[in-house]
Amino acid sequence: MRRAGVRLVLAALASGATITSAAAQARRDGPAATVRIALHPEIDRPTTRFEGWGTALAWFANVTGGWPDADRQHLADLLYGPKGLGWTIARYNIGGGAAPDAKALSQPGANVAGFWHEPDASTGRDWWRPDDPAMWDWSQDANQRWWLDAVKQRVAKPIFEAFSNSPPWFMTVSGEVSGARKATDDNLRPGFERRFADYLTRVVAELERRQHIHFRTLSPVNEPDTDYWYAGNRQEGAHWSPARQAMMIEATAASIEARGLDTAVAAPDETSSQLFVTDWAGFPPAARAKIGQLNVHSYGTVHQSAVRDIARAADIRLWMSENDHPMPDDPENFEGMTSPLAFAEHVVLDLKRLRPSAWVFWQAVENVSAVDGAGGSNWGLIKTDLRASADVPHPIHVTRKYWAMAQFSRYIRPGFRLVAVDDVDTAGALSPDGNELVLVHVNGGLVARALALPKGWTARMVLTDATHDAACVDGTTVPPRAIATLILRRGDAGGEPCASYR
Image 1 (cartoon, helix red, strand yellow):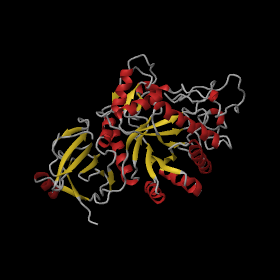
Image 2: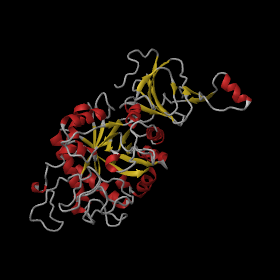
Image 3: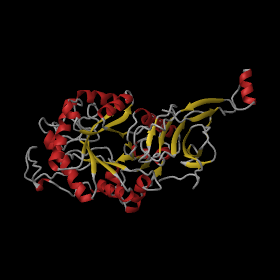
Image 4: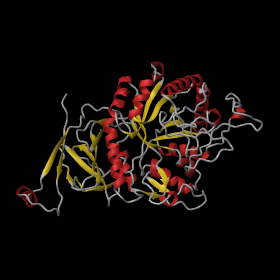
């Protein structure tokens, strides 16, 4: 089949360097030399239908959902509003819930309450009965649930996923929701798979009824086969061997069926592609058959194409369900480009190698460094003080990494299809009608790149660099240290110079 090509010409436009060779002198004095890279987006054979972008609500929603209405509405508009990032996906964290007398988890917002209610006269850890209404408390987690309403109000067709980091404390071996005493030990009590699954599906069913939403998927484990989770950690977490993961997947599917939910199991939500492959290899066919969506995080990128191929061979939808990617050791800087460029390159490569149906951020709102210590980091897209009380002013800092995200989420929209592009710095997607091609190009270097476009297309460019925040600019030359989105339309584009959203 014919491949429709889009040619990208990279022009070396650097100035001020000392040039000694005759050829270099000629290049300096004459027309700018070019490095020609012929791109061939396979627009006649688009691959993955893209569903959208979003974030996990843990843990910032557990804090900000209780803020004054003006502050929390502003945050929701920034992420899900038509003039913000235009996200359409939200991952709701079903808290396990620590013991009433447990030391609070130190991560801001990480103390997500469970929906269980412990009777005053209870003893030990075997008092909970899921079929007893007195064992449930549906007043819990009001702040994160506010965000479910906020997303629903802003998105015409939102996609909600529920996920768990840990079983409730009384279902764990250690008695703690932060993990087992040894980080590589499974922390769910043996034989408690169905009881834990019933806890999760009961929460899904009740929140669907109360919030008037639908959870399309339920992920029962998170970053399971790692050594991240241990008793006394800062957040909820639990280790799961592949064998125990498989048991939990089957138990969750059985509980979903018994409750009559229109919800699929998502798994394994592993931290990296390499561990995902290990998990999948350890699942028996019966467990694999119960998975309706494959979730992988992209904190580790080895074997990403292997995960892509597993999803294709199994014919199961694949999500990149969690990531944040600041440059390591890059001090907090709301305006700097170092972390935004690293983040944008990471997204481009995820789209190219995993070809996921969705790309979901970790928590979009993070703590400012003045709160968490000297130097800080560039985790998150928006910075604020998550430790501040609800009744004080809440300065909200929109970072340039936010605008890097906008270069993708404003233009690669639900219903577009990812296309293969043979340039390492460029990801592409095609509109449903085939008349719009979006290319996101990351120029992390010190030399500007002149982008030459094919005949028959009209181009618009949106730019984020040290002086532009997802701004419409003239021409098709990408400055050094910049992220550009090219919106190509067949013939005369018409309309405004840079339409942000559909």
